[in-house]
Every structure is written in C-alpha cells, then in structure tokens.
Image 1 (cartoon, rainbow, N blue to C red):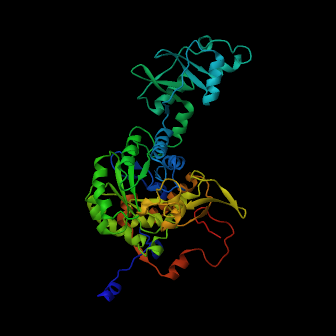
Image 2: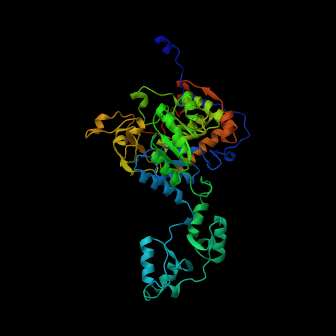
Length: 493
C-alpha cells in the first residue's frame, strides 16, 4: 500500500543530529596517527581529499594538499590534454630531480649562457661535450665578467671538477654530498648519462614537507576524475601517473555505470574509486564489479540542490554508515563526500565508518584554489559553484552536464538543462596549509576525547549520542556577540 511507504520510511541522520560521546582515554591529540592506508602503494598521512570541482581542485591546490599529506582530485571540466597536463604538474612538482635539463656546450659564449639563464629563469647549466658532462657554469661564474667578458667561452670559466650523484641517491644523501663539496647543484647520472639535476634549494623544500603524501618513487600523490564512460580519458590519466582514477557522476548506482566499471578497471593500473552513492545496495553492486573505493554522498554539498530539485538523497551520516557496513566486509575504503562544515564533522564521518572525507567548500576559498580573489563590502571572497550548476554545466568542457546524465544541445543550451547546483562565493580562507592545520587539529582533538590512537581505532571505538534541536543550539556559541572570529569556526554574514 502507498501509505505503508510513508509509515515504514526509515529516519535518516546527518552530522548535526549527533555528537560523539567522550570515552575514557589515555590518548593525547599530539600522539594520534591520522594516516590511512589505501593500498600498499598509496598511504595518506591525513584522511582528506579535495573535491573534483572546477572551483576547487587543479594542480596548484592538489600540490599543496599532497604536501600536507592528503590528495587532490583534479576536476574533469577540461579537455583531456588539459587534465593530463594538470596531473603531470603534480607528479613532477616535488621531484627533487629536475628532468628537463637545459645544457650548454663548452664552446658557447658567455652571452649565450646569460641569455639562456635569463630566458629559462635558471641559475646554472651543465656543460656537455656530446653525452659527457664536463663542467658546470653558474651565475656566480658569470657575474664577475658580465661587463667585460661576454665574448669569453664557457670552457674558460666553467667549474670542471663536477660532483655528480647516481639516480638512486636519496634526498638526505644528496644534501650531505652537496654540503661536503660546497656545491649548490648536483648533476644526476644514470648509466653515466645525464638524466637530471638536483639543487640544494629543491632538496630543502622537499625536506620541509616531511608529512607529504608520496608514491613509491617519492613523487606527490594525485587523483583525477573521469566520466563514467570516458575510457579514453581514464587510460590517458593513468598513463600520466594518476594514482587514483575517480569515476565522477551524481548517481553511480545507474546500472549502465555499474556495468562499465569492470571495463574501466581492466584498462587501468591506478586504483578506481567510484561515486557517488548513498545505499548499501549500491555498495554491493559496485564492489562486485571490482571498484577499489567508494565515494558516498547524494546531495549533502553546500552548493548542491539535488535533494530539492529531484527530491532525492540520504542524509549523510546514515548514508556513510550503511555503505561502511558493506565496505568493511570487503576491506574497501570509503570517502564521505559533502556536508563537512567543521572539523568535528570529519571525526563524526570517520566514527560512522568513513576512511576519508572529501572537502569542497572548505578548500574553495583558499589561495591555491582556481579563480581570483574578489572584494565585496570590504571582505575577500572566491568563486565557488557546484558541478551541477548552470555555469559548470555550460562552461568548461561539459564535466558538469554528463555528471548528471544530461547533454548540451542547440544554441539555447542553458534552457535545455536541469541544474542541480548553484553558484556563489565563499570567504577567502588563506592558504591550504592553514585550513588543513585546523581541520586535522580538530580531528586529533576528537580522537583524543574518544580514546582513538589511529583512524582504524576511531572507526571502532566512536560512540554517538543523538541530540535534539535544543542540543544543536547548545553546541554552538550562544548568548553572545562574536567579536573575534576563530579560524576553525567561521561565521558568515
């Protein structure tokens, strides 16, 4: 009977409906381990991904997040070549070995050296005689004779005693060799051939990000989004070095999508993450096709209108817990995507069974996110829009439209789309590192209260207390005027 549908409908819950219950604990926040092992080759030091949105994740933000220990998912509202290029930028960003090395010959003039250094914004060049490196020339060699000796040859002033390293030399070993020999750069050789160059500056920068998420070769981790049927893009992103390929669609339990997962998986080496879903049935069907990870969330995002336009969705904490019940049986990691406003929400998501969370709004207003900073009424903002918004669907290269199984047709293309998102602006938040520091700090505090030494323990020991609207009101600051905004408790006018 129709009335039974209403009478037997389950209750769905989200983050504000619960608080985590404090447990007896010997755990201090400073000692907790927030790392998550996805597989033997992918280990994140913080359980955070950035959303595959065109106002959130391109290479600059993906680099910054990976340096903090998380992973960025490059959005797909780009041409295939552009998205591949973004992946390559991340994979090469923190490599201490510069592979594309500009060289000079010993018979070149100092004028040639100066021009090449200025054009390429570099400060040193290996000197090559055929395939053999015979010297190094730097600005320090050139500067004393710029005014009087531009016609001198490289071989007259280059440093001939070249200190080189092998390709397998670690960053620490390279730094020791550079300091011991008082040199600023070290040519890298493989089978006696030049394959790159390492500078002290790059080594020190590498060491400054000790918590970075890296692959087995020491490169930053990166994920990239593809359409549910875009096999060509998935293969290209895999070849470019993406560690995770994320099938990006609004309803991954569409059975045509489910059937294609196996084809996608068979043609790539990277891990395959599939989303978005919100039910245990979806998890069972998708895991059966070989997915390596699941992304959970139908409509919880701050800019998403799916639950209003389509009337469809599952409150996020209920969705996460149901999918987690299935995923745990198969040892498949799940990502809570959407609805995260505060660091406490990350802790609640993990307590409900998530391994990781995906942030959109929280990272959209950072310095590294795409877009310019604008000033409105004396305050700084950055653009933020849902991939189901009209702008995302009609702009870029359609990554927003086919995500919602829609097509752009005809000259009046905007009139033939049904948006499931909005466009707006979010307050400027500063650097990614500052946002992550607060988010992870809050998570660590929660783990301390719950007595969880690591993420897996947090999933097991977390207990929940369901609260009322009065409890929600009591939880937030109340009965005062906030005069100094806290970095981990933003307020919007």
